[in-house]
Amino acid sequence: MTIGRRDGTPGPSQPDGARYDPAPFFPEVPTLLPKLPPLVALRAFHALASTGSIRAAGEALGVSHTVVSRHVHNLEQALGVPLVSPSGRGLALTAEGARFAARVAPHLTGLAEAAADLGRRRRPLTIRCVPGFSNVRVLPRLPELQRLLPGREVVLEPRLSRSRPEGVEVDVEVVYLEHLAVLPPLRSEALARPRVFPVMNREMHGRQSIRDIDDLLRLPMLHDESMDLWRHWLRAMRSRRQPFGACLGTAQLALDAARLGQGVALANELLVEEDLRDGRLVEPFPSEVRPKSYHVLADAARWEEEEIATVRAWFHGMCHAESNGANGTEKTPVLAK
Image (cartoon, rainbow, N blue to C red; front, side):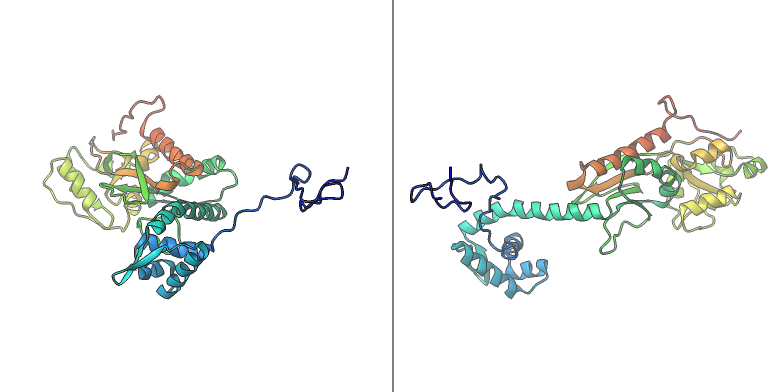
């Protein structure tokens, strides 16, 4: 039997005016999308609706306000509906324009997110950490994370500053702060609040008789650019003494100097566990001061993405394992004998 032609017009065996659906016979024939307005015009209109003014929309898009006006006018012509009307010295959305803006916004956002997701998957996953935590805890365990994220390049960036150079995107960040203020679009959660205490090398401790804070403060106090951590610890220990000693730029350098016997440094338990266990450093007397917490941060919109959730769980597991004993009980401090 002769059927209609592929374009749907009648074939030789069909009566004039007959039509047929070619899809059952030609399943590869694509279904065409309805005609869409120009994307550049939609972006201009969305920027105008979001910012409230032609000039602000132009600044947001990096074009002049006259370009925005032209695109909005072209969109009105394409739709056959007035979307804006004069209002004072500017423009305001019409009722139709407001409804159209509300319908269009989530779809443009979805397009932007899809494009951003593709871009993220082409670049490495970047993790920024405070240097001590990065060097002591993260770096030795980095191969484990890479096994959890097969095929994904991971970049570890030790940095104290939370500022982000233009063009540098950080996927996950770990900070160590007393108070953390998180603003959108970021989200955070606490990882650990480790104990902070003075440490020194075993040889120095053997040469000194250290029973209390007054004995401790006779020794050189090693610190980073600020004495704030020492001041906080002394206040928590109810001491009115003021700290003094050598400034070594970073907390990690202060710990290195303590290992060399150059004085006493403050350390948190996540950074010196192996030093205490192996005897490179000793804690002269017990104290229970927890001035700061480690927090993990990421973009709130990506918080539950598989790779971000994997990194967060990895950090939680790492901190939990280090802050508790093998049987899940609280660790007992390793004190000098």
